Length: 86
Image (cartoon, rainbow, N blue to C red; front, top):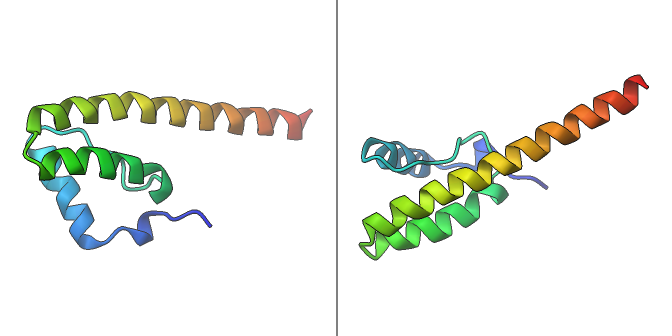
């Protein structure tokens, strides 16, 4: 089972909004929760421990990783469409 946006609590969404307001990149809440969890564990732990600069850097690295995931997902979708047409 893939967990998605309906599994995000209002507190989590609020935390993402606050993180964006202070300049941290956050993943889109429409992404599956199982994809977002590593971000939350890593960046969240850094923030909890007061390591803001490191959290900001980790968030940017996560952004690159998420872009790769999205690109791979799009590639897979395109390949599936091509097979269905072909």
